[in-house]
Length: 328
Image (tube, rainbow, N blue to C red; front, side, top):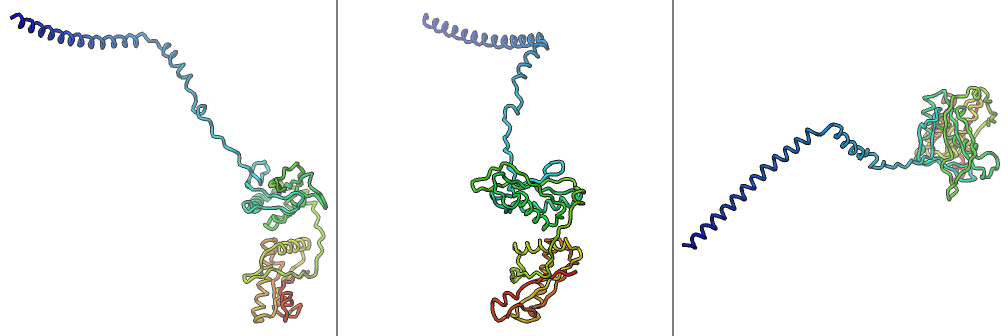
């Protein structure tokens, strides 16, 4: 009897503890929500605008502009070797590779990547006929000077290229510039030429005197012949410059271009071959030397005016020629 009583008492006490614990947990949960809500309400009601500003401003001050966090990209300037500038000194165009020359040498080197410089200059002068082009040609005081200023001599080579492109020689001025030059290990300097446009100097143009050029009665020229015609080379270019000087200095002079052949093959074919050679020369003088085609006549004598006997190889070679004759 006593044992059963104790078991019932323990069971009842355990159930009481469970319910008490559960009740306390419910009470604490409800009380915490109310407390938090009341605290939050008091904070919101009592918080002033000034205190908000005091809190926000330090935060804003810690925020840095994005460009101060990320360093700007460093862009290396591109080295430019050849530049042409307008009257305003603004860059019109440029090429990475410049016109170079070797120390103590007159010759110039125009890289393939910059070969279009002369066409750019020609087009700009064509669009701006009231301008002239200054060729700034540098040379070093340490270079040997034999006949004349190396800067002038190199500049004159540029002038020949520009004239062949179609620019009037009177609109080109060579300006020799002496400066300290750092040659590379091969004694090459690759910024030898710069171009600057300026207003056309009418007084300089008026003061130009036509230079005296001796006019030969006849020039015999031996081109490089091929199956497709006459091949261009330095000898042909030099002949073109010479013919242009003669024609410019003598406005009334006319040019007769006559093609000659050997006697190998049909005489009629040889006549046409000689005529084609003469026509090619006239075309070259017109397009490269800007010589008026109305002042030039192309004709052929074929095989009928030999200088040597055609029975030998050397004789046939001498007979294959083009003759230039200047007439009034």
